[in-house]
Length: 213
Image (tube, rainbow, N blue to C red; front, side, top):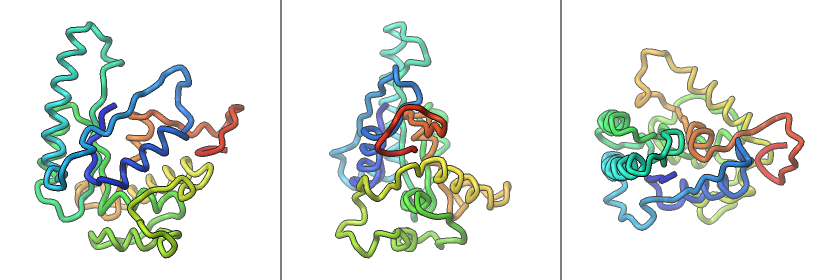
């Protein structure tokens, strides 16, 4: 799985934790995760530029997969993770991603909404201001770098509740409201489940020090 992230720190550090400590949906399947734009400059991290780069890589990966005769279910996935923030052309970026078979994990106003859902339900609007979500993180007053995700910031057994809270939060918006105007909103759980893929099996006999109980 190739992932293009808007953030230099937050999304990559979160993905690394989930990859290393999460419980795989299928223990017999190993997914190699690569942050495809790890060294990219900030100017190359807008949603449109992320999708452009991801679409190009997806074309290359699809071409190679066809040449190799690889079954489609084993084709590499290419993802973008980006936020609404104050970006322009969000709708265009999402449409371009769909057309290019690039998957997107999207949050409004930002990824910190998903982090916050690990701890509590989220209601009300952030007015498109990411900092309002970040300052509500329970550990915010105690950390030097709020952008860096640490393992201890994600409670053990939190995934099932986190996804449930996200779905409830998203469902609070009227169906006619476009996704890009839903504040707050996140579908990062699609990246976790479909990309990595990690699943919080409630009834499992496999002990895990993290992610589920």
